[in-house]
Length: 263
Length: 269
Ligand SMILES: Nc1ncnc2c1ncn2[C@@H]1O[C@H](COP(=O)(O)OP(=O)(O)OP(=O)(O)O)[C@@H](O)[C@H]1O
Ligand SMILES: [Mg+2]
Image (cartoon, rainbow over all chains, first blue to last red; front, side, top):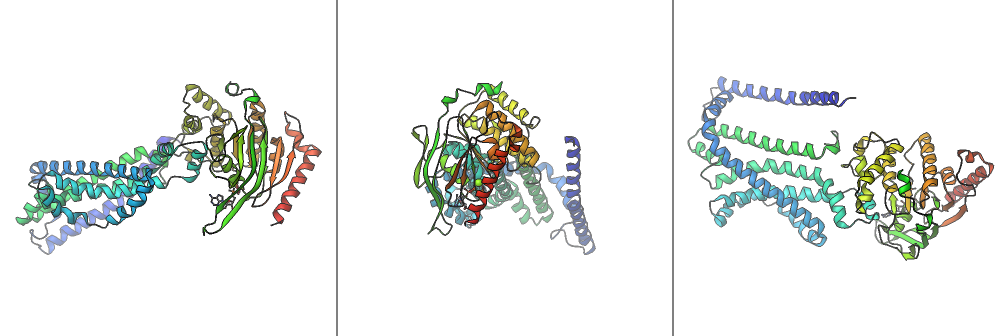
């Protein structure tokens, strides 16, 4: 079997798999549109999809600055939070007593509603970039740290035994086996963090900001512009999907050895 | 040729001695102790091929783990010549019972792993590994990931990894168990030729009596768990061994004897 024919087949299954949900989404939008028209729902309450689309096109030029602000906040926060997560996981994994002391607390602390800390963070750090970044970093940190630690711990026993018998040090086993083996798990953590990142950036902007999509949402809310609030939501969803897609494509590239069935 | 670069005079190889080793594990409930090895002693002379046969679960893999320093024995010692290597690692070349290949490395890079762990990275190593892949029917798979190989092919990769390891004594844990009878016979013949060329010290675990007799200078038979050595057998056939040796009446008699011995040790439980 040639590579290209298998690729064509993979593309065809992927096409079939995306077709159904797209059809359902189109049907839902059609029902929404029809309902708004038939029942004459006022636009300040629920605008029709067509109205939202028109508004999106009109607002697009003036949204650039807000998108840039939120995008920057998201990316910096996501990068910082994920990097810290991976680093902390590695240190805890390598220093066993530290892990025994800290890991249970880490799991527990996932129950703290990070978003609820936002007002407090404003009190501590003021209205600059810092409190917003801290929220996103916290939101991204936990899923990545926990996933990375599970991945590092879940290394194949038989391979670890082989490496030990061959005289490998802890450090060699970490480098040769545990780090590459943890990648799939790290990526599932990163995917969760990516979906949190955009959302928490917007919420962070609610708490205190004079720009960004969160700020834009608040402005439009006080103006009763439901259509523009939907415009903001559409943009946020697109941004989330973009970040998610970025992670998935990096995952594909770095875990090619797993084969399509395991992914 | 590759083999010549790694054949020092036979006297350079160390003698492996296992002296009265007792080993066991805590049971899953934790308050008891599961004895696995009961005073096991054996010797692998420089350049000798020694097989161990024994019932499943008797402690054969555990014995290799003790020799490799993975499991610390409660009593007894492991020696390489006069050096006590009990509970220390990195002295032997090892092929585990499961292939234990790194799934993200190509076949070639898996074969080279043992050398890499020993700090040896040379272009000759790469060439040598490629030669061996060709000789074991794995050419064309050098750059493939292990998951795309059959179980038997993965075992051959694990075998080559052990073969290219710099340590002189090889511990092989059922290297041919995942092969069908035909391929197995082929691999046995191949290992026999290879070993007669290189004369490396080998400790070889198998369930297969004929395989043990065909390949070995000495066969040790272990009892059910806790494993004791119930028989040490010198295999009398000359080297190089011909394939027809299996039809020799003496060979058939020895095979019968070992089969009966294993049957009685298994009944005894
Ligand atoms: N790490 C371990 N912890 C606890 N018990 C173990 C451990 N390793 C092996 N055992 C036990 O020791 C006994 C011997 O196991 P071992 O793997 O050495 O047998 P074996 O002779 O290699 O069997 P097989 O021929 O099936 O591979 C078994 O009862 C097994 O449950
Ligand atoms: Mg075993």
